[in-house]
Length: 81
Length: 219
Image (cartoon, chains in turn cyan, purple):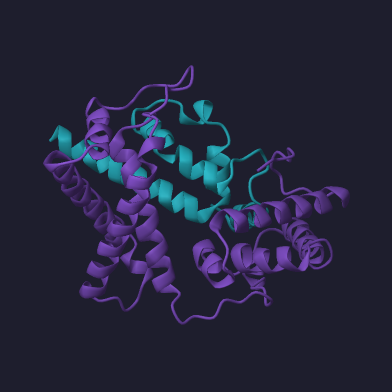
């Protein structure tokens, strides 16, 4: 990524997602469903619109999402081994 | 537990119903289920604390153990209180994990910011000026940045300005700011969202764009 790209990305980060997004409360409510869909290779964004945009705009919800996906994936790997 | 909405995918494992039934009951079976849930949550808490341990400089093993136990206990209370809201849209274990990951994450962020000052009025703007793109790009980005700075000063309410500066510019974790201001993550994000909408409108009025799809959003 060039400096220019990084600057644009930082500006986008400042201004948040352009499209519609869910609230933090709705994000938490749907997070388990969203992550299980992702873990099963389903199109989570099509089924739960507004989640991806929120995860891009809210670092705390994104951290919760990333951790849950990692944990569920680790559990899945363990049960297969 | 309510039915899944039409068109949703039923991903729950058969044992999800067993968890809810047993935890909703009483006697030795329920006690065993609570013990199993505690073990599951503790595993989730340690997973999160190990994953984010690098964000805290001077945390001892004993302190991490305390944070894990506190996160597990708080998640257990929340889960048992909300058991009736589990709709079976996910596996029960995924649903339960999200509570303990939230608790562990919030506790660790607050621990990382313990004793640190939260800047609400002095914005850390210079980071954007450190890049060296082409002259034309530099001009465009300098213009965008100047417009955002001006709009932060003129278009936002005092509360929106404080929240935007702390969260978007100064990198204060939203849970830490919520704790200091006596509010919630959701309320602060709504304020941040409204501030961002205002700033985007100000840029659009000035004929500026950051190059993404500038669709009007709702929270």
